[in-house]
Amino acid sequence: MNFIAPLAALTMALSMAMTASAAWAEAFTADGVAKGQSSTEIIELTGDHTVMNSRISYSAFEMEDETNPMNQLKGPCFGVLEARGAAMQGNGVCVLEGLEGDQVVLGWVARRMDPQGRIAGYWTVNHGTGTWLQASGGGTFLSSVNPANGAATNTLKGAITLR
Image (tube, rainbow, N blue to C red; front, top):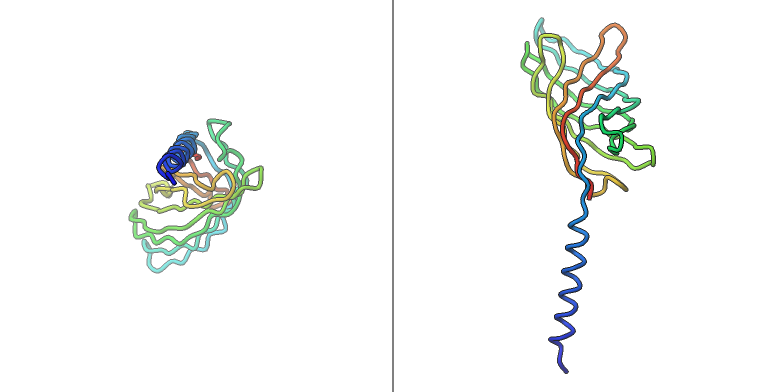
């Protein structure tokens, strides 16, 4: 029995299927603003050394590209930060849900705090469901919280790709 011809056909079909699925990808810029409410606990160790247990509940992401699936995400972000003067370190995650119910987990890493108290760092797409199952991407963030009322604003720059 000649197995070479069927094997070659199967190999070619699998190759074409893998190429077709790998070829589909949609990229978006991830520039926009997320707004929410902070309930951060601040523990002051010394005058310029603090530890923060941060939790922000975002009510909406407003992306410049309205077709971006990040547009209208909502949900909590939480993590721990340590600040010594302007030096900042910390990390956490956001568990966000889109309008269709798909979820995405974004990771974030804080790198510095500017003189206005805004925290700057990096974010990445870690995992997700549905639309976000094989997503990738990331960028930078600049986050601020109004100490008087806890209103949080997070400005994002970057890109994501859906597969």
